[in-house]
Image 1 (cartoon, helix red, strand yellow):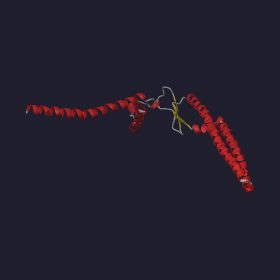
Image 2 (cartoon, rainbow, N blue to C red; image 1 turned 180 degrees about the vertical axis):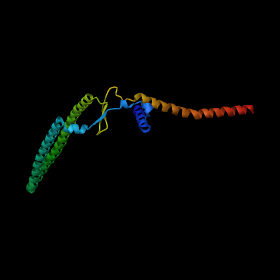
Image 3 (cartoon, one colour; image 1 turned 120 degrees about the vertical axis):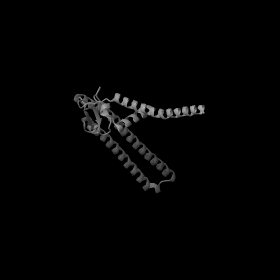
Image 4 (cartoon, helix red, strand yellow; image 1 turned 30 degrees about the vertical axis):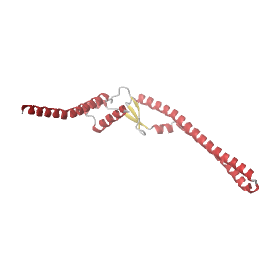
Length: 208
């Protein structure tokens, strides 16, 4: 947690103050080739993505049809029971009402199961598709020889070239070290002044 916090502070500090041209040491010849990609659009529009979308739609429609059919049957059973309730003995009426209640609970449970099935299928298929898309993005980036690829929908860096021209790790470390040294000196300065004043007062008292 402390490491993550320190990294966040470092990044924010560098972003806020910026590295000078001297610190960054990036010439015009070292300009970065950064490209962007819409991973969501790629997932939706690639052939596999379209196929997965149709598969999920089919699964959802089948589940909906099953639920509708069972709900219609349940509604009919409930209507039939109401129409003949006055002709049934109390014990028989109570029995059929209990059976009707069980059918309602079964239908609710079936609805939850279908929803969970669709949710899990979507999750698995989406994760599999995301892996394929990322592999494609990395392959395309290497083929084009770019330094980095950023997902414009999430801001995530999806690829960085090994030893790319924009690595400022050393400069960032030097920047943070300078800030740390300045901070240490600023804290040390006033203390030195206080010690010096105390020594002067002590000498004056001894002379008196």
